[in-house]
Amino acid sequence: MRSSKMSAAALALSAAALFAAAGGTGWASSLISGSQIKNATITSEKIGPGQVKNVNLGSGAVTASKVASGSLTASDLPPNTFLPANGTAVDSNELGGKPPSAYVHGSSSVLFNRILVGYGQSQKLLLDLGIGEIDGNCSPTGVPQVSFTSEVTNPNMIEWATNYPGSGDINTANALAIGDTFTAPYVATTPQAVTFQVAYNGGPSNHVATAWTTAQNQGGTAVCLFTGEALTTG
Image (cartoon, rainbow, N blue to C red; front, top):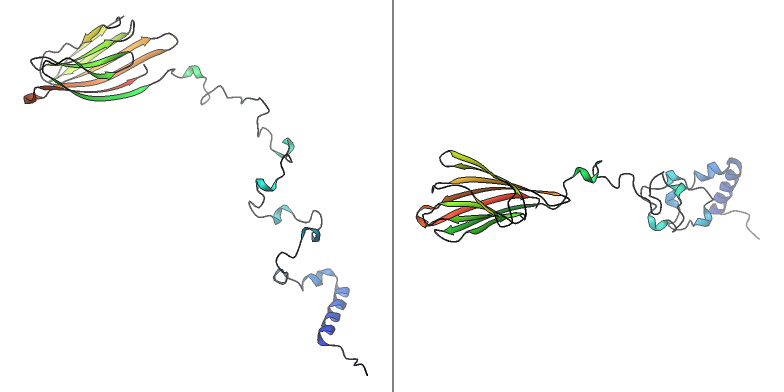
């Protein structure tokens, strides 16, 4: 004789089916939570078209590797995002909103040096300005002298100096020839500071060099000490 009693499990399933039929999918969905779904069991075939919305995506979830090559067109991007083929930016010929003519042309350098010259020795190069050089010379009696020698045609030069303990001088030399030398007029062994500024027009652009130098006798060592720093566009 077959038993008419139903198992507890079968009874529960039947009840769930009955209530689902009566209460609809809303009630059924309340019975299933994410923790009850096995990982990786829901495939793309189980998701209806258009069901995954933008709000369902995490930040950075879609990367370039997930975008098919050639699938994005200009209509997918904000206007003026990219230049057209062979296009140029409106300000491509400007720097900081200014045309190239507003800037100094050519190269520039910052120079510095320190040299020692013995009494009566030949002059030594202190700074090479590109358009001329600054040399240090120590006379047989220990007088330190600074000079500028032109390496271009027709530069204009101004020299001013402060001599210890307080005297000074200003001199100019215009249209120097290549090889012409101007020596700061100084006859004492005490320290001096000499500044040279030289301007030269080399054609399409101008060159300016400013050199700050010091010169002094080292006392009992029989040498003269020279230091120099320059800013030059030559």
